[in-house]
Image (tube, rainbow, N blue to C red; front, side, top):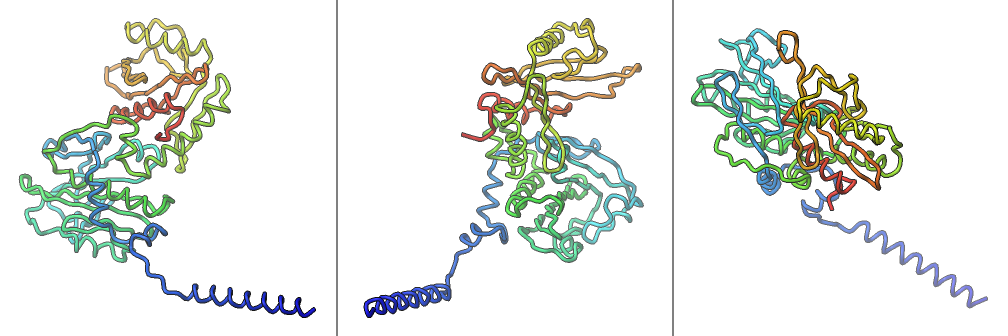
Length: 395
């Protein structure tokens, strides 16, 4: 009995000692570096020079476009643009830029919207440029622009011409340049809405990529280096964009390997409820019909094909339309245009279609709709990789 009591007393003492050690360790002051804090949470602070320079050093294929026959702007090769001329009394576009009231300008200003496959299909973010005449080179400043936004949650980056911040969980990138030759300001803004639920770190990364684009608007001495592969895209475009694509292709991967039955087609949706690619498991006759159509385009005999929807599950054919086909990295790029009786083109675009052979089963992956020519390269690269590896995961 005495031995048992001694054991109980010993166990109780050990328990008290363990609790004392736990209490002491919980009260111990732990000092963490900024890097450790960033790694452990998404509450990132101001962008470091290293972060900025990493993005600025990434590959970005560019092209120069002319706006209103006056302004030469450099934009991403993958981007399209639309221009509208806005009268000063029109308050539906932009009211003020800093202290500049656009509704009181002496002449119209230009409003340029930029779009790409991510902003068209998923409205992931929006971008626009405002160009307005002004002789005073000191009229616009980042200080005044920042003040015009009132309460800003946090500024991640700021220099004399640029600002990256979030306001109510909407993430914005602003940049401006002054065009001395044309006595005009070129003002850029992009915004990702608060409704887009992505990690803050990824949103800031996107803003830095868009800042890089904005800082290149007036760069006319660039060296163009195109993307060579899907791997090249993944290494150089924003993480948010690759994650969006990968999310859709994870679903396609399962359909390809497990679920999709013969003569079935799927078009997975993005988080924004949009579709941009589809996968079809072909029957032998419909696969053959598609290749007959390709041959007919090459020999200029599409009008002789019988049936309006010849092989429609892969590609719907209009015998009255004009087609051109070229092959690139395993994909067929079908350039389509349809004309009115007057000869005016009222509809055009490119469909990218890539055949896939998986375990002796025939599949076709394709763009869900016709896309602009500027979009085709990213689809060619991702389809080529997927057709060979049956996944978009980089090995």
